[in-house]
Length: 186
Length: 137
Image (cartoon, rainbow over all chains, first blue to last red; front, side):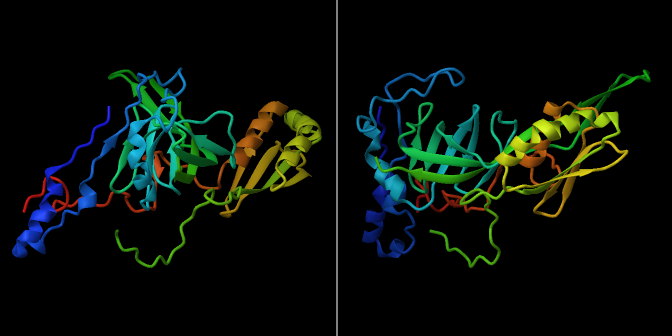
């Protein structure tokens, strides 16, 4: 279902021009108040862990793609990528310290991130349900390193009992850097 | 659009264009007499040639360190070094330690607070109460 909300403030700049005293104070620009669009593919939401991404049959068949060129032409973009189900809002060049260790990767490898729920620019936002069609964007990340946190020791004990149990934790983390974030021309 | 001030300090963006591996040197020290070096000796004969071939950008040195436990010493581009004692480990475990040194940067281990670290300006701009749908003159 395509929602196109035309807010009443779009008409306000026109009214402001008719009143010379307030024309200088009009700050709402027509472009800024255009619709925030939602993408709702026909297929139902799939469980994240098991099923692949459910997308419409073709990108062209999706009616909400009409504003995509406007989104694409804006300067800066951000994306909410999902890695192993964890969402991260990133721009190009950002460094993500994942709260887990990615298996089977080593420093220097490039990952292609395909699960994204939100892709936005300054005035336009594309939301997926639950994910955006991966043919619309290209998001790649480089694995920078695999680190760990410093060892932390949790001491567990009860009152009036001299026995102290020490639990050690040293979680490993994978650090990736977003090397590319592009809205593609579809 | 916000005005960009002149940027005097360059951003570190290893990985955006090209990726430079932070580990520049690995030194493997073994001992012919110590029993704790048995796994290391087997690693050096059987596993190390393949590891070295896969990592041509790392300078790999093998040197005896008599009457001591076997160690792997890694040197990094930021000048720090990490040393791991691999006494009494099997050759596959020593390979895991070598991969650990290869895949890390030389930074000291830090606590994990926030996942995303960004030096970019916000895409949607700073909040202003005077811009937006609800502002009425």
